[in-house]
Image (cartoon, rainbow, N blue to C red):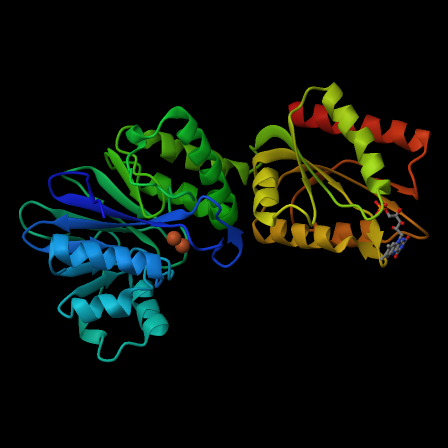
Amino acid sequence: MKTHAISDAIRCIPVDIRTADLFEGIWPIPKGFSLNTYVVKGEKTALIDLVQDQPEAISQMEKTLAPEFGTVDYLILNHLEPDHTGWLREFLRKNPQAQIISTAKGIKLVKSFYKIDKIDSALRAVKDGETLDLGGGKVLTFFETPNIHWPETMVTWEASSGTLFSCDAFGSFGALGGRLFDDEFNKAEHEEFERETLRYYANIVSSFSIFVERGIQKLSNLAVSCVAPSHGMVWRTNAKTIIDRYLRYASYSKGAAEREIAVIWGSMYGNTQKGLDAVRKGIESQGVPTTIHQVPNDNISYILTAAFKSAGLVLAMPTYEYAMFPPMAYALDIFRRKHLYHKTVLRIGSWGWVGGAQKEYEAAIGDLKWKSLEPYEWSGAPSDQDAAILEERGKELARAVRA
Ligand SMILES: Cc1cc2nc3c(=O)[nH]c(=O)nc-3n(C[C@H](O)[C@H](O)[C@H](O)COP(=O)(O)O)c2cc1C
Ligand SMILES: [Fe+2]
Ligand SMILES: [Fe+2]
C-alpha cells in the first residue's frame, strides 16, 4: 500500500475502510472512511494512532508497517476509541519493545479496553505540554484536548514541520482512494468531502462543540502548516480551511447555523403531509432554502446533519396513540443527545380524536433552547382555512430564519 510523505521524517499510512456498513454501529458510510496512522522518524520511530481491529485495516497495516518502517519504539495513542486502537494487542505482539504514550486518562482506558498481561511497564502517561524527543531534531509535543472526541483525547504536535496530528478533530467520513493531501482533490471531490465532513461533525462531534472551540483556541499559537487528522484528507496546502470549517460547525451549536430550514416530516395517511405542503409553499414564497427529510424513511444520520446545519426547522407529524408519531420521537431524542440547540421551530400535525403529539413534543424539546413559533394542529384532513394558516406559518418561519 502507498504511504505518503508529509516531510522528510513523517509519513502517513492511510487505510481505506469500504466494507463496513455503519460507523460507530449507527452512521451509514456509503463512501467509506479512512483510518490514517502516521510514522515519525527521528533516531527513534514513533507511530501515531492505530487502526481498528478490522480485516481490511489489519491486512493493509501488516503489509506496510513493518516492511516499510521496521519496528516501532513509541506508540502514541491520541484517543482510545477502538477505531484507533483496536489493533493494539496484535501490534504489541509484533512490537513488544514499544512504549505506549497517552494521557493519564488514556492509559487507564488502555488497561480497561485491552486487558493485556504485564502491560504496565510499557505504559507512559504524559501531561499537557509534555514532549518526547525522538532524536535527530524531531520532538513531539502532546496537548490535551478533552472531549474531541472522548475525555482522554490529546493531539500531537511536530514543530519542525508544523504538523498537527489531530486524530478525530478535523476529520471526515469518506475513503481517500490512494490520495491523501487537500491539493490532490478537485473541486467536485472537495465539495463531496465537505458534505461528508459536515455529516461526520454532526454525527460524531456535535455534542462536543464547546470543546472544539476550546481546543482550537488552546492550539491557536501553534504555527500549524499541516493538519493531519486520523480520518479523511491531510490539509497541507489550506490547513486553515478545515480549521475554519470546524469553527463554523461549532458555532452552529450556539445558534449561528445557516439561514436555511430543515423540513422533517412523517405521516401515516397523508393528512399531515397535505398540511405540510401549505407550509412549504409559504416558505418557498420567501425564498429561504430548505432540505426535506421523511421519518422513518430517511436515515437519521442525514436528518441530523440537515437539522444541525439549519437555523430553522419544520417538524411535521401526526398524533399516534396519544403521543408523537414514534419515528419523530426518535429523531427528537437524537437531536437532544446531539445538543441541537437554538433553533427556530414550527411544529405542525394532524390528529384524529383528541391529539396528544403536541404535549409529548413539548416535553421532548424542553431543554433544547428552541424558539418555537405557535404550533398548528388540525383534525383529519386540512381544510382550506387550515391550509391558509399553515401557509402563513411557513412564511413566518422563513422570515424569522432570514432575519
Ligand atoms: C396507529 C394510530 C394511532 C393513532 N392514535 C391517535 C391518538 O392517540 N389520538 C388522536 O387524536 N388520533 C390518533 N390517530 C389518528 C391520527 O392522528 C389521524 O388519523 C391523523 O389524521 C393522521 O395523520 P396522517 O395522515 O398524517 O398520518 C391514530 C392513528 C393511527 C393510525
Ligand atoms: Fe473518536
Ligand atoms: Fe475516530
